[in-house]
Amino acid sequence: MVFNSVYDMTNSINTVRKQHFWEYFSGSKLQEYPNFSDDLTTNNGWVFPTNSSYDSTNDQIDLTIASNSFDVSYIDLQKPAYFGSGNNLDDDNFVIRAKITKNNDLGNTSKGGSLLLQVSSALTDSSKAPNPQDAIGMRIDTDRTGAGNSFFVHSVTNGRFWDGESSGISYSWGIGDLYWEIVGNGSTVTGELFTGSDYSTGSLGKVSTTQVAHTGMRYLKFCGFVDPSRTATQFSLQDFTIYNGVTSVVGRWKFNDLSGTGGLVRMQDAVNEGIYLQSGTASSADRAGINFNNERLFSHDSSVSIVMGKESGGSIAYFGLGNIIDPNQSSPTNISVHRLQNNGYYFQLKTADNTSASTQDSTVSPNSGFHVFKIINGSSNISSSIDGIVQTTKTSNRPTLAMQPILAVEGQGGNCKIRYMECFNT
Image 1 (cartoon, helix red, strand yellow):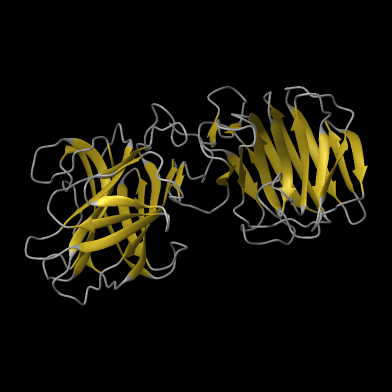
Image 2 (cartoon, helix red, strand yellow):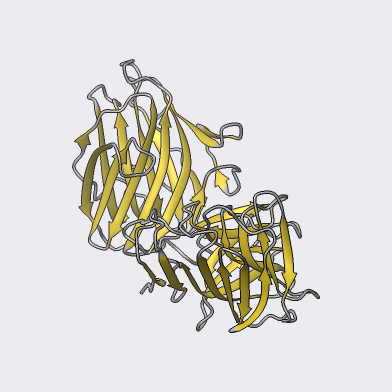
């Protein structure tokens, strides 16, 4: 059973006035965080067959549907940077999204094909052979047989790819982008196509089928085929995301590798340990963090941030608010964070205005225990306290723009843990 984080927000995420947000990071899932998010700035982890390739110039995967081969491009979701070893798509609740671009004009009646997007327990995909697998997915036909365009969803246990497929509905789509969404809620799998990148505008239709029990769902994959009488259709695939353990996406936390690659965030499998945030392992300059994806809800001069967390040793952690997502970029601007470094420095208050940053020491020596870090961003100064004791009052380099929650860590495999965060406008 999945237990989500407990959180509350007084207004919608795009509302600033008198916003009050708190989250107690508990259980096994960081709610609405994309457990898998890949904008394809690298092809790390992807395996490509004959008909697909990685396009590093455009950060996408190019696929030419040229035969009935069912060649499968895939990535294993059990990579540590994604779901983690031994973890799979949730048995009941999930949201899967992908951006697809079609590069052929359907007005050319000699072109067409089917594109298949799926998460499954196995890598085989032929609908014509008994390759048993648990799977959910979506198929779109782009005038494959000259009969127009339609799309389907499916859910199958120990079956073939198209077992458990819904009835198809027609849609209209020319050259350009299309956004796919597949949602499971334990009883129904629903697929919807959008022309809008927010996955809410420009719906081209919705289909659903009965959701069956799934186990071992670890491979995100896609493939395609074309009717022998047709010629190739070309697609590009970008921006895959999977939200595990939820049935809707409000949009809150977003993970970023701020410097380097291979960072991760996950819930700790331990009592009252909160979330575990880790930077990449290649360089001491690697950084990773979570933020509100630039939804800046909190005032620069009348807000408060409270974090219960710790730096786990040999790294630097940042807890607080910022207009940006990286509190230690080359010229950090408009931030107000506690800076924790467990190698000789006192815990510090770090702030930045539009041009430069500065720090001020507390009286708390570096240590790896949990503490409560509070920052009050006022109209004349910024004050900070640790475990209820006021440590600093700072008047220099104060932010001048609205801010969002930011939690970040820096170091070669640097890590920190956060139990609780609260932010509110005063």
